[in-house]
Image 1 (cartoon, helix red, strand yellow):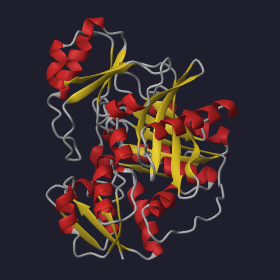
Image 2 (image 1 turned 90 degrees about the vertical axis):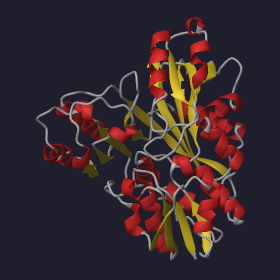
Image 3 (image 1 turned 120 degrees about the vertical axis):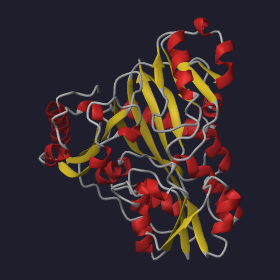
Image 4 (image 1 turned 120 degrees about the horizontal axis):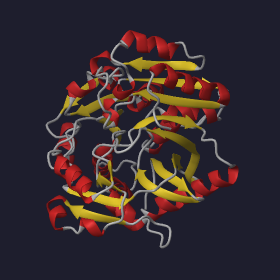
Length: 410
């Protein structure tokens, strides 16, 4: 029996699932239209698979089904944002377990998620504008600052904080040239204009249990780069929150996934807390990226990758009893705008490995571009994972920021 992995994300979660599937005794088949993309990654999922099938269009359900028609398929699964719906549709056609497609679609398109999760009196205002109607929109009447984002992009791509109508026109003009992204996906020619919410940003990590439904694995504190792009710089798990606020966030996250009718798989819900209110940023109907699944496993013992894989298998695998290893854990990404011109990849590697709570990390010499602005998650040039006592982890994060010479906004 084989598990079909349809494309992969770029932070290693797919490879983690593949190693687990090999332990379970499954054959692995990787379906992709972007072999060259994975060859640049430090953790290439193609190296773990017994077979790699290249297709012209991995978003095309009929082409993927045709390519795997002679395989004894146990599951069709994707860890990539852009292929979640395609994988679920393929599984549905084959009569295999999958997350509910309407919920996946509602989460994929941020305008749909906003409409379905609206809570009068506690919902940021938003407006959906087709690209070719920006010129006809009364931008002067809107409340600033506001955030402009594509309705169906990911990884902070083309997200920008705007303070004036001129800012909105400038970012939408740039978006016109963004026809195909680095994953070969063609985003809708529509943008979302929405109220900018002040406050600290977090994410709530959910996984699906066949008996209990949605379960909260925990809440992650997020570190963001400065405006206008807000690129993620790192995460700390568990987020240092008062217990009542943590419960409030978890309960609200469960209401949001229920509102969009998402059932099955996992959900990574990004939100902000301001003046005691919890505000939705977006719902991602997948496991968290940024190595958050590893942080969760270290601190709670919950293997979210195993839970996600189990949701897609007909023969269920019993989850082991959770055994936490550390009190706190963090992932910290290094962006080119933090790196001085005289710092080499070897020098950065030295800075990362000498941290007391260092567990593992990676530096990408092939992506080295010191001094350039970070505009999306794809601009990362390295990362480190830390774990240990809470205070020690935070001290190492501070020390790294100082050593880099340019402190990322927290």
